[in-house]
Image 1 (cartoon, chains in turn red, brown):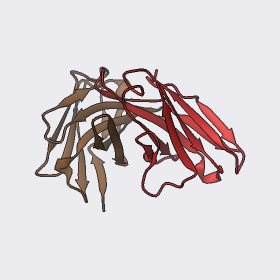
Image 2 (spheres, chains in turn cyan, red):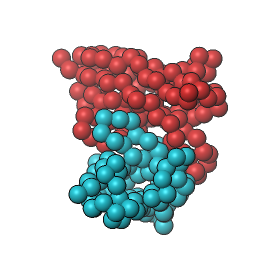
Image 3 (tube, chains in turn cyan, blue):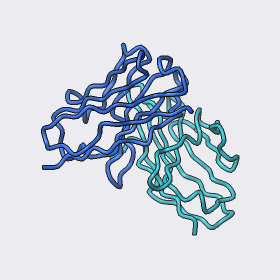
Length: 110
Length: 121
């Protein structure tokens, strides 16, 4: 069972906006910034968002992140077929001295 | 090119051992903290170990503590993970990942493609 809680799936039609939530605790998201990763089938994860809301180099501005309290969210605006992937949130847990991940959300473009 | 390349995976029997390597290139390896993250087949990401840039600070997930050992050789731009007392549940793709940022704003900004470890009789 993952430390951070994400919905297992999300979907939308092309052009729609999809939001993925990520819930944690005071020792992880409540204390440290959140990273979001995209994992396309059969490939390594890639950093999408760091520092809660900063897009990594080369990431389209359709992707945005936010954090409030012990929760964070990733929004994908103008959903495209190439956005079909698994998305993971992660944060450093200062009490566990560990990176903690969400269980992943599979995004399907209908 | 900035990259991380893992090697050393394979098929090993339960109770066996393996050493994984991660070769870094294109950046100042000795300046970065590093991690190992694994992913069981069809499952999510699981962090298993962290090492500071100098190697003086090390952390492990409870699931591998006492069985796995992380180390690095900054003169060879290499990261290692020694896997001992392997169990079937350790079967996964193991990836090294670079940790940038600092303090309360850490960033995992670079991942290797991974090496598959299969633990089976």
